[in-house]
Amino acid sequence: MTRERRGDNADWPSWMHQAWQKDAKDEGSLTCVDFPNSDGTDPLQIRTLEGMHLVGWGDYIIQGVKGELYPCKPDIFEATYEAVRE
Image (cartoon, rainbow, N blue to C red; front, side):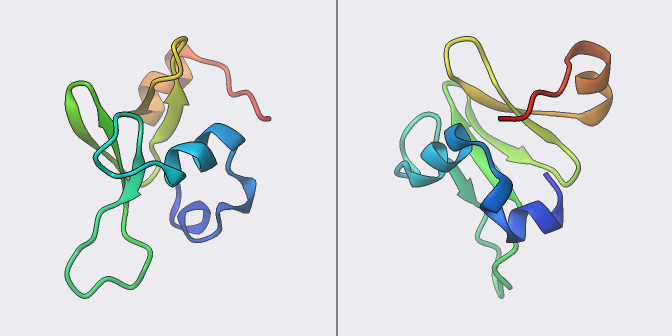
């Protein structure tokens, strides 16, 4: 996730759009962190079984085998996964 992709979600995969539409209280929701004096480009957060996880700038948002979402730091992602575009 970059500031540019956060500001323009046109290239988000369908599963991210679906997570964005979920209620913020629901597991698997993707919502923005509402900082005071927000300019509308605050970072994102994902609600998981373990609680809220902040998606830092540069992090990947990945979907697990059961559809769960979680953030992944770039070095871990690059050592573990291959990027797939929808």
